[in-house]
Amino acid sequence: MWQRLSFRTQLFLPLGLSFLAALVMGGVLLQSFAAGQLADENEPGRRSTRTVAEALNNSLKASDDPRKILDAFVHSLDNSSDIQFRSVEAGPAPSPKDSLRDLHGVPHWFVDLIAIPEMDAASPVIIDGRRVGDIVFMPDLSADLFEKWIGFLALTSLIAVLMMLTGTIAYLFAGSVLRPLQDLGAGLTRIRRGDYATPIPVAGPQEIRQSCEEANALAMTLAQLSQDNRDLLHRLVSLQDDERRDLARELHDELGPLLFGIRASTIALSETSGNLGNPAQEVMRSVEALQQTNRRILDRLRPLYIEELGLETSVQTLLQNFRRQAPHISLTATIDPGLNEIDRPLAQTVYRLIQEALTNVLRHAGANNAHVLATMAGEVLTIEISDDGGGFPADNVFGRGLTGMHERVRALSGSLSLLRADQRTYVRCRLPVETARDVPAAG
Image (tube, rainbow, N blue to C red; front, top):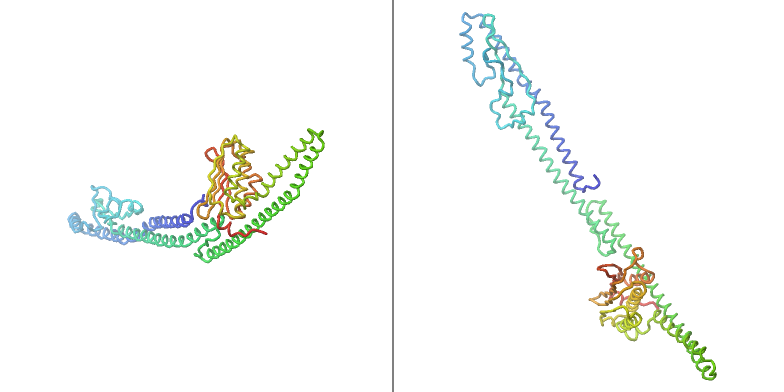
């Protein structure tokens, strides 16, 4: 639970709890010491009450008319005095809380919070051996309570000011720490997504600055490794193209003449020996099938007419061959004529991607219609092949053919994705045209 809280919450929560604890501790201390302090402050008044009572009783004993002296004493007392005479008929003296006069704005909950001690200082007044009343000490605690209330407000205000000051400092400190950490987190996210060019701002405390510098150094290393990887992939793709070209040349130069010779010899043998009949025709059909197979293999190894006719015409020819081969699939296409401006190796990659995707549609999709899109927008070439077939297995997004195309696309700093949406399967590719043009072909 604690780990899920934000940094600011983890910082401010202990601070707030500590200030609240300090406030509660202040209230406890106030309640503990205020009662004893009130008792100590009013102890002289209690002693004075006993002294006055003794002097009054002595005067009453020596007087011939003690009632007159008592009445004169009672009239001499001021109503605001802490020492009062209370006759027996008036009942017991009230408690100090009940005798509070003017609280001067002190709230009652604060008065209830303080345990006011019992100040029993009643001294009996005796006339002719009979108790006629008491000299009681009834102090006015309003001023003392007001003093305690002001002290409590000062303590609370001090804690509030300290809390605000500490919170402001902590907020500014948290911001100065969190901002570089957020920049560092955003930078690491960019690095994870492959953006190595945008540096992470170096700021904050020394430890965070060092982490930002290390992250920037890591981004530079990853950028260099990514470039080396693309160069290596491009060289591998170029070597594959060279190998395909050499193999196609060998098939064309070696197998082609042999098949032509077999065909010519079979025709000559059939003409000189009229009794060969069906065997000669079978040989002719086999030779024609081998020649067609040889042409298909040559076309897949290296479509030589891309360099002669251009990519757009080559793709249109590929689409026509697909329509003849799969008449049950309705194939539509949107091909940008600007594709003819593209040179190898991008042209070969585009051609083979469309070829491989259409092959998968024919062999595995079970589709009724398909669409091929190849457009150029600025320096970005977009290719999309979609069909309404059954889609792809969840555990096999890229087959062997598309895996090879993915490597070719990565070598050209492009992206290739396969997704399913709206009951259609999409093979989407984006290639930077300018980058592909600038990549030198391997000799």
